[in-house]
Amino acid sequence: MKILIIKLSSFGDIIQCFPVASGLAKKFPSARIDWVSYDNYRELISYQPAISRIYSLPHYASAGIFPSVVHYLKLLYEIKKEDYDIVLDLQGLFRSGILCGLSGAKRKIGPWNGREGSVFFYRERIMPPPPPAQERYLEFLRYLGIEPDPYEFNLPVLPQVLNVKNYIVVHPYSRWRSKIWPWRNYLELTKRLPEYQFVFIGIGPWFPINDSNCIDCRGEIPLNVLMAIIGNAQATISGDSGPAHLSAALGCPTLVIFGPTDPSEARPIGKKVFVVQSNAPCSPCWHDICLNKKYPMCCLSEISVDVVIKKLMILIKN
Image (cartoon, rainbow, N blue to C red; front, side, top):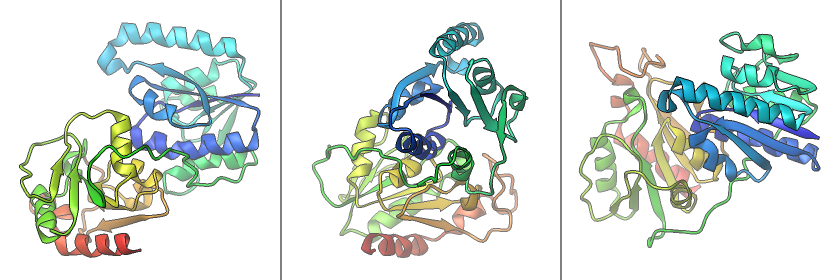
């Protein structure tokens, strides 16, 4: 049997789909399971042991429309040659729907709420269950008669790369500016916990990190280094972002600070995940830029350092 998973992006969503690959491999141990994604997620998917082959696409925003279309047509030709038995479109968009619909597979399965007309390319459609988001992906397994394990990410914990033990990872950044807890709060947190070591990671607005109990690893780092840093940490503190999902999937105790997004929908899935959220009436708004002119960023500024420290201590001690 040959099975193809189509999930093009993004970092956190792909991680939440890994239990789908694990469930398929457990149910069909002799099956070959392949995956289609954008180029920049290829290495991440390579750490999922159930995946045999990874097809990758350049994103049109970086590669340009014409080269992307040429690559897309070549990919479609490669997929049709493989004669897949099942194709699962976990993305549910027009470009993934076409790959599914024209794949030549015997079973073409996608979500009922697929966007951009993708639903017309499926032979079988799955009704998405209520949140969290990962349930939308696990429902594909249930549809195939497989009882899913939401924690079966099967990502490896890579060898330690830092010359420090018992540290806490801090990821203070996000692609959405509205998701960033004020950086002064992170610095206050490290000052009030001098007995702990903190390792800062991520890419975003620069701010100074000068305390002796802080290690600055911000900037571009290889994925394997990122996985090693997070996988060997005592805990991770992060906003709603990809590294928070990676931390949860690696089994690291993870504290996630939520602002404009809803943790019932977007929280990382893991056995050691705590969420902190304020009671701001405008949250969740799902806007990448705060629109509250009277009390800007109140959903995050109302979350005190005291609350985060209290949750962090419970997470570490338990």
